[in-house]
Amino acid sequence: MITWPRRDYFYYFTKLMPTGFSLTVNLDITKTLAWTKAHAFKFNPAYLYLVSRLLTQHPEMRVGYVDDQLVTFDVLHPSYTVLHADETMANLWTAYDADFVVFNQAYLADVRTYRDSAGPMPKAPQSANLVNIGSLPWVNFSSYTPLPMTPLKTFFPIFQAGQFVTKQQKTTMPLSITIHHATADGIHVSRFFNELQAAFNQPEKLLAH
Image (cartoon, rainbow, N blue to C red; front, side, top):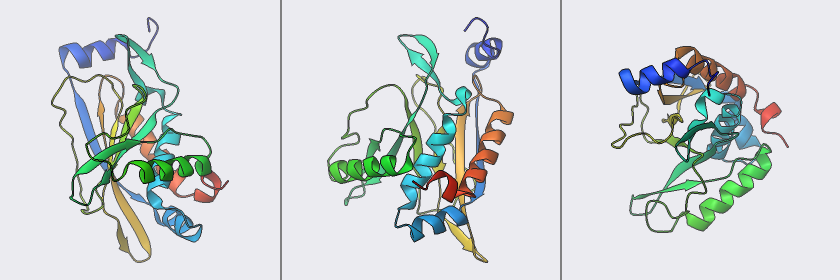
C-alpha cells in the first residue's frame, strides 16, 4: 500500500473529510432481458453475474479489510435479498463463477435452499468479500442512497436496481451505486456504468455457455 496512488486520498476521505457519494443511472437492458427470456433464464441472476463480472475488472471497488489491513480482493461474491411470504426479507449470497451457467445453477440452488428460511441471514456469510447487489422491483426511482448506521468495514460499492420501464420497445432499469470516496472518484463510477451498459448490450457474448 505504500506505493498505492490513492494513499493520500484514502487518508483524506476517511480521516479529514469522510465522504461517499451516490449516483443513479438508467440502463438499457432490452437486449439482456430478451436474451434471458429466449433462453429460459431469470433476469436477476444475469444482473448479479454481469455486475459481479465487471467488478473483477475494477480493483478500486474491491478494497476491504482483513485483520485490520487494507487488501484488494480478487473477486467479490454477490449478496442479494429474497422476499418471504410475510414480506420480510432474507439476505442471501452466491459464490461468483466466471461461467454464467455455473453461477446461475448455484444461484437457483441457493434460492431453493434458503428462500423459505426464517431470519435476515439464513445462509452464513462465507467471508469478508460479499458485495451488496440489490433490487427494488416494485418502484422506479431516480435516486437511492443507503444510510449505514455503523462505521464501514469495507469500501465495496452498494448497488440497487429499480423497476423496469418499457417505452417504444426499449426497456430501462434504474441502477444506483453508493461508494466511498476514499477508494473511487467520479471517473471510476462513470467508467463502470459505461462498461456495464456495454455488457447489457451484448448478452450473447457474456452469458452464453
